Length: 302
Figure (cartoon, rainbow, N blue to C red):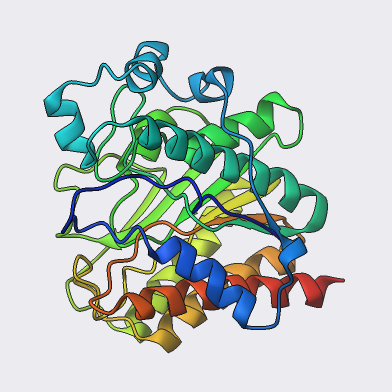
């Protein structure tokens, strides 16, 4: 299973910043320490090019990011101060999801050990997201003739508003988001399928709604490829989550999604999306469980 990492491209943040940047390197270390992966499974991705980004983003916005011309207001909306490191990291993260999609189409499953930047719109970034890697990668696979129809399954606790906006009206890419009703973003966009959950939603209730949504999404999307945003933030002890899922509930969420892919013999590319647990090791554990479950899917299908 090919895993694409970008943690060596550090996004410099001021002291005390609430974004848990270190989770990415700790995730890679945890996967290596598990003994289930070797160094050869980990790959550095190319950066997404202007052409690849422009299939989902306004060229003027791409140039404003690349050239350091984002206004203070735009940087505040993103939540990161501009720096050359921010640009490189954001391009590499989008490139990692492109690479994961190519690898999934060849091997059955692959992952970006970052990504899931679903709050980035065509002409702006929001919520720690600069470029929308799922939209960029989906359009790249279509442009390269690798997939015609794509399903984006977004299980981050926050609605994938940027993804919904960028892909609105595109019948070839189906967007499904299951998220907290009262959580960020407070002005939501219309995905092809949205399932909104109440604060404190438990494992059983979440999995029931997820299963309903997966059946609907797969039936309507008829995909050649699935892009899965496996957010760790529905976890009950996530600082930004507000839902009530346990480790076991999140692991079962992953198994349900992978089970649908296996049943239909569909490739799946995974991105990590959010995770802000009070104990960063909890976030790392949730992400690592997703990747290990995906590896089991690949072994089962061989």
